[in-house]
Image 1 (tube, rainbow, N blue to C red):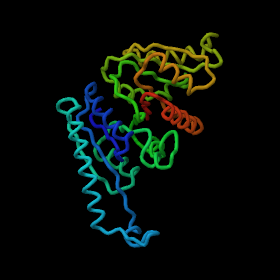
Image 2: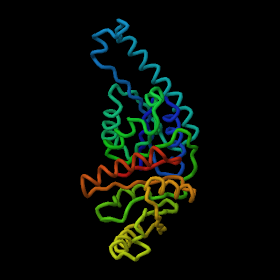
Image 3: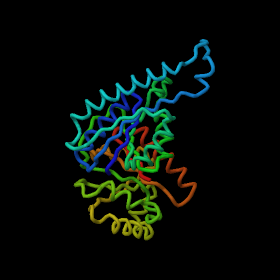
Image 4: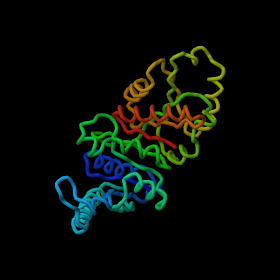
Length: 284
């Protein structure tokens, strides 16, 4: 994990995500943190008047870009006091749509992790609850893992991580290389929780036990602990468990083995991120 990307729309949630990224650098090997503000103006907005019969002039656009860049500079100055020594903070004002900006920068700058606030300015303006639409779009399109940070979350060193998933087709379901790249040699407790409403584990289901054995071999270097919860609601079961164990992050694993499961995963991941009081890491 050498490079983090943090989209900034100057909402409280985005600023909190930047603060999270800065503090996370103190327990990771990150070298670069990129702060990007996406400022897209359609060519039509420059050619045609708005309902107030006003047209956006190029000078206004340049002034807005300069203002946004100055705001990013101020944020960079603040975060520079929080990051680990040697970490470099880069700032960009990108003239693309947010989604395009994130995908392009991720590919061009070899970003390893995107860190987002769970809501943005548009979500606040529209009085919406739950995840901002930008989070859903970015989490789906991003080629790298995404951490979604709640707007009022105060950073705590990550000592416990809850990994939530079902024990089905573990070899296809668990992106081991990605997970190991994220964890590295970090000293943290991994709590692997399986929501087991049918109590298959208690009934010593052979298929379930076999899948657990496969997972154990994959992650044995981290000495994970395994838990089974008889809870019909996956979301509340995982989040209640994370709260009970005082975990600092929830990790949601992707389901890769069918289109239907992929849709299900997106739904569960988004609900986890929308309802969680701690950051949620969405793996790829």
